[in-house]
Length: 461
Ligand SMILES: Cc1ncc(COP(=O)(O)O)c(C=O)c1O
Figure (tube, rainbow, N blue to C red):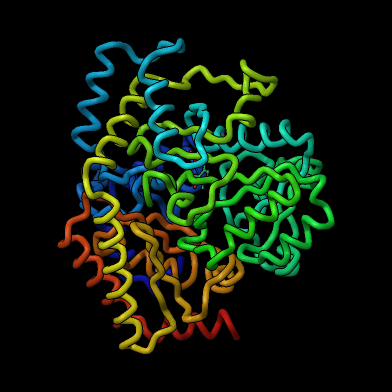
């Protein structure tokens, strides 16, 4: 981060002295003071004291409008009172039986009612567990080992899928045939070799690849809208074409709806796009902040899961009472209230007003949204795949995106520093919050036009 060019962050440093001091303490006991790579940013992350509705407060007492949403779960708003009450009520009966109980099956039943592909369901805690089980059961079902994923998409941190998340161009290979680039040191080469990475929205590449190697491929796994890339939409007909190609080659199609599920619609993107995968992973918004995730899908595939079938499935905390109660209450509210209608109206207004201002100013900038998810890209070029984003945004600590994020933070708007300017709106955001956000984004566009043009020139030469 170039502090000289980010006065807001200098000012912020004065206002966040307690976070700075806390970071000194934290780094003695945890790697760089945080408990996950995505939580760190330079020079130090803000330590949070409290979250309520659409607000976060740091330990210095600064208040922020929250667009981080805890990496996505906060769809109703932080610490929703009805969800909290449901959790407290559940705790009067216990916390963890690790034995069958009514509420966990009620949750499986609700998922089946909501999600088109869901005939049977398993529950897990983290999303990574759900995508792990999805890949393994697909391998067992097909008797094949290879998997296909798309460049830029995120499916959690296990080796098979944590490939080519945000590869830099020196290692990424040609766009029409990307290399598979492991994200983490310590990933066995043999595992990387089983994952083929393709370009998003490139149906011809998938068709050609499956024509040649389809009988080795167990599954295609994808985010139906890639929110790892901000808001990277499927082009019209793309998801249906992927479905057709998977059917042609007997490949299991997995929609990873960890972010899109329940946030964009009760039935997720599969409901909105009318394309039904074989397996669906879900989590995050399903429980508005409590750690529940799961895998749902065709009964014949899910029937391979233990104890019905030979695919191992266990977990001490699966179906834990508190989280299941939170999920049941969240689903009740999502169905009862016009949450999705509101999230789409708000997101569309945000994007329209930001785009109007960028247009008035003649800037190479655009806001793309899908419902509550919105992302400002500092380019006016069409964004179709990961490379269109990587052209100008890969490091979360440098460049125009970092300056934008610093400006937002300095003006009381929290977006997690990330390689795309990804924001999540919740049902708790008021019209006044949205007005303020549009004003602060507009201020950046109005005052930093020269920097935005320069960044664009640097990116495209
Ligand atoms: C699309 C997607 N899949 C899987 C995961 C992994 O979920 P978790 O972080 O709960 O392991 C995430 C997390 O951000 C995600 O966005």
